[in-house]
Length: 190
Ligand SMILES: [Cu+2]
Image 1 (spheres, rainbow, N blue to C red):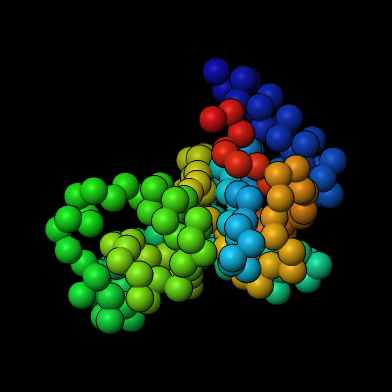
Image 2 (cartoon, rainbow, N blue to C red; image 1 turned 60 degrees about the horizontal axis):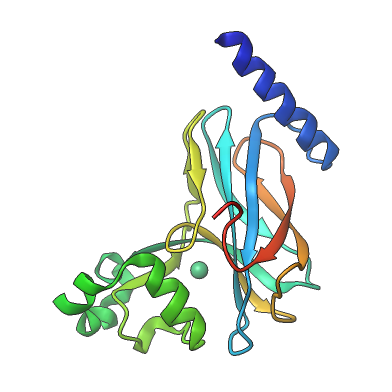
């Protein structure tokens, strides 16, 4: 069993070395970004990430050819954000019961371009993880619609299916890792 794990880690190391990451402490799988509607200049990138040792994803960045900036975001109930007090009136039982997180992100916010959640009906909001995304050793953390994501802010052009771009991930302990993200309608394998 131990031998098997070692082999897997070696493969991950080789893969990352080939991408120029050169660090075997971080494994990234299933990297993708969602297509972005014309109505918004926001995009989101997703992937599964496993750190060999306890670490924190503190920041992400993309080329200025792609977007003005990138942030590590989480989706949380509107009520939990301290700075979201003005959202309280949008909280009602009906919206909480009917809304699942994926739909609120995918269908409502993205399709109508309503990413300014301050005046939307949504019960979920996203916010920057100012302290970063914790990565417990050996545990795969998934960034996916409705949850953690790398937010692309100020897209230069809409993201269209088949587009590829690089995202550089900055960790508290491990070296930076650059991954290539492919734009798709849905997650790889879904
Ligand atoms: Cu976001």
